[in-house]
Image 1 (tube, rainbow, N blue to C red):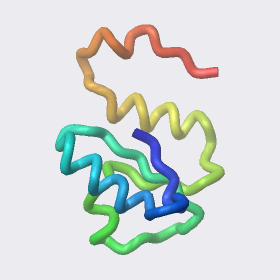
Image 2 (image 1 turned 30 degrees about the vertical axis):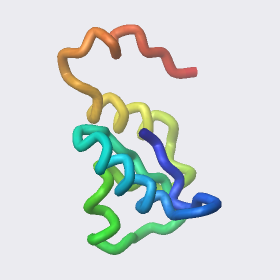
Image 3 (image 1 turned 180 degrees about the vertical axis):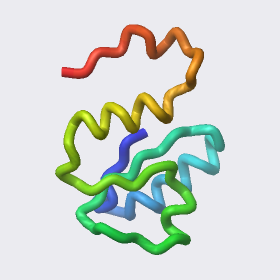
Image 4 (image 1 turned 45 degrees about the horizontal axis):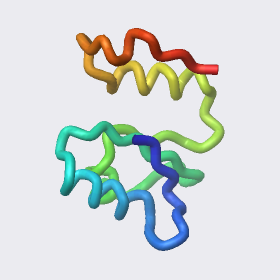
Length: 79
């Protein structure tokens, strides 16, 4: 899951907390304009990335979070 920190009715961290309560194993990437977030907020996400990060960095991050032996990711393409 890729979540923006600034959402209309809640923060991305609040949404990440909700997702974790439903699916503990969900992989969550939080994207934000803030360079640093409090540790207690980062506890709910796997990765915090700055908005404007290179697409290659995002793809690498997704690949690193994806299950290692999943055929579901074998045919992923990014354009």
